[in-house]
Each structure stands twice: as structure tokens, then as C-alpha cells.
Image 1: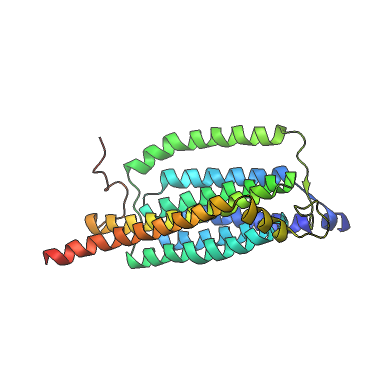
Image 2: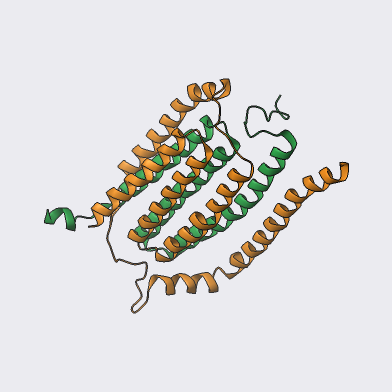
Length: 107
Length: 176
């Protein structure tokens, strides 16, 4: 029990968790049929990449990795604001959120 | 202690992400995404990124997800329906995702020289310095220009959001 408490975590586990979260985000992006949940899957992918940035920053004691995560957060905030405004505009025009019905630009 | 915390919160992360996929109602997906983000904040703390843990909770779980839930409730989003498109995406997408995950996982597991995460070990090799001191020193000296550019980016995003959201209602009231 004592060894369980003092054990350290290999950094590759964090990277694997980040890869799995990213894949779950990709799957969500593919199978979800609601515009808002598709957008949430993109946020999930951004978070997964942030986790691997923080992990590598810990590995190499590099402060710039953490600052990059800070910038990613800012860009994500801007993206969320504009994206949700676009979703509201689409909903006003088409009165639906299903991605299959928003096919005006489809070939 | 570190191992237990990692296992618990990585489990929360994965459970939240899987629940996001399984729920058919957007508000349930949004709430499970909040669980993912808060558990990621704890993992950032374990990796010695205190500032980012706080920013994750405030910016992501606080601001962005509030925006999401607000839009879900404003648009009265209902359950999504499964269509032909989702079946095609499932047939093609799942093998592709499995291949991508397999490639990334083998690269990570074969990588040499990855260390272990130790609690309390910071970024700084500097004496008498904390992580936040080092982070703010680099952010406000070396990277001051990108930092200021992001403020302009946020301003443009605000203007774009207002323009996008207000134009539609203006046309609608104009036709009435």
C-alpha cells in the first residue's frame, strides 16, 4: 500500500490519455449529428492537445509550452464566441441544428 | 498519491468524453464536457501547471461552457436523430480513428527518454522561483508582442460575434 502511494506516473500515460481524448473528439466530430455537439467535439480535441503540451512542458522544464497552452485557450475562447454566433445565425436562417439539413454548399 | 490522483481523474476524463459521445441530448453532452475540463485542470495541477489549472477552470469550464449551455438553451436544441450520414461516418470513420490512435500510441510507447511525472517539481531550475513567476516573466518580456496580438484577436472576435448575431435580427425586423 505504501508503494502505491509513493509511486510515480510515467509521462507516456499522460500522452496516451491525450491521444485517446483526441480520438474520442474525432469520433464525436464524425458521428454527432447536432451542430452544437460537433462544436463541443472540437473543444474536446483542443483540450487533448493542451494536455500533451503541458506534459512536454513538464518533461523539458520548458515554460513556453505552458504559455502556448494559454494562447490556445485564448484562441479557443475567440473561436467559441464566433462559432456560436454563426450557429445562432444558421439556426435563424434554417430553423434546424441537424448537420444533414444544412447542405446548401454540398455538391 | 500521484498515481491514485492520476487514475481517478484520468478515469473521470475518459468517462466524461465517452458520455459526451453517447448522450443524444446536447445539454447532457455539455455537462459531461465540463467534467472533462475540470478533471483536466486537476491533471494540469499534477504536472505543475498551477496557472493553467486556474485558467482552465475559469476560461473553459467557466466562460466557454457557459456560452455553450446558454446557446443550447436559447436555441431549444432537442434530441439529435441518427441519419444515413452518421452511418457512413461510422463505417469509414471508426477504422480511420483506430489507425490514427494505433500509430500515435506506438510512437508514444516506443519513445525513449520520457521521464516520470513527479509532484512538486516545477518548471524552474532557478533558485527561489515559482512556476508563476517564471511564466509571467517570459510572457511579459519575451512574448509580449504575441500576447498583445491576442488581445486584438479577442476584440475582432467580439466585433464578429456582435455583427453575426445582430445582422439576422435586423433583417427580420426590417421585413416585418
